[in-house]
Amino acid sequence: MSRAEDLTGPEFVTRLERLARLARKVLAGEFTGSPVRVARRPGSRFREHRPYAPGDDPRHIDWNVFGRLGEPYVKLFEAEEGGFLVVVLDVSRSMGVGDPPPFDGALRVAAALGYVALTVRGGGVILAAGSSPLVEFRGAGEEHRWLRHLSALDLAGDGPNAEAAARAMTVLGRPLGAAVLTDGEDPADLERTLAVLPRGRTLCVQILAREDLHPRLDGEIRLQSPEGGSDLSLHPVAALVDRYRALVRQRLAEAEGRARRREAAFLRAFSEEPFEGILLGMLRRGLPPFRS
Image 1: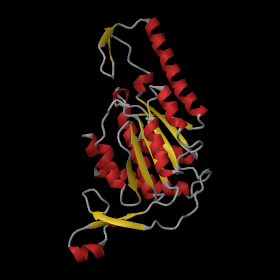
Image 2: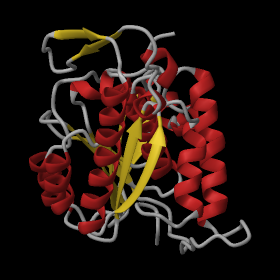
Image 3: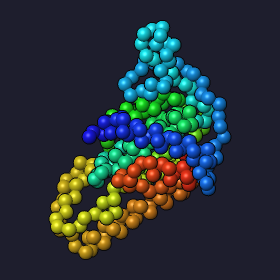
Image 4: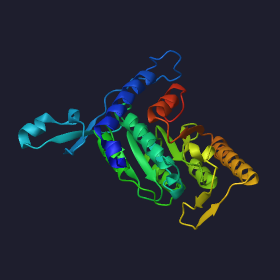
């Protein structure tokens, strides 16, 4: 199954809808011990119509317009002030290393974050993926366009991009919060990006493949540079294995330390994990970006 079929297919969307229902309960404080309390808001204001596209939620079709024009149109709504979520996605080639690669896990977590922001909070999402132009999604009715856009993304060689994050902040002023999804391969890029995002309302999610932490080190090992460098084949020895594990520990500690210094919450996840558990863990622990 292709990534596009996965993110936009009925099975994945059904899982997102189920997650959104659970998220509403957590945000309303219906789970015992939930640290999150969110005040109810008035409904979002209607903004405009646009032609219906395959994958759009039929509940957002304006049947009055359909009756007049004979063509389906969906309603778009204005996001409430302060209801935007900034998603900063690492699209560096190191995100493609692993089975499954961290990029696949990051796309699923991004899909869930945006879906909840659009359908539960009635807000919007701005995506900053590397140095690509910002893409904006406003209000109910945009969740399927969000999924289609994520499905079309690929690795472009850019890590967390501070300039793109800064542009998003300029557009929004005061967003609901921000989430950075990265493998943390370049801690300096990560810190520069976190520096321009809202303190106390940003979450850094370091997404890894489990084999990053527990690689198979038997037989011949082939090392390949994700940035297009040469390959290297070798046989592991005890000193090499110890050195590798020390570098992994250093990489993990450095990413978390940079996030903490910028007053960002930090969460480590794995590309093999179901995205529902990752997102519900954020909500139940009262982590940004959904903390009120």
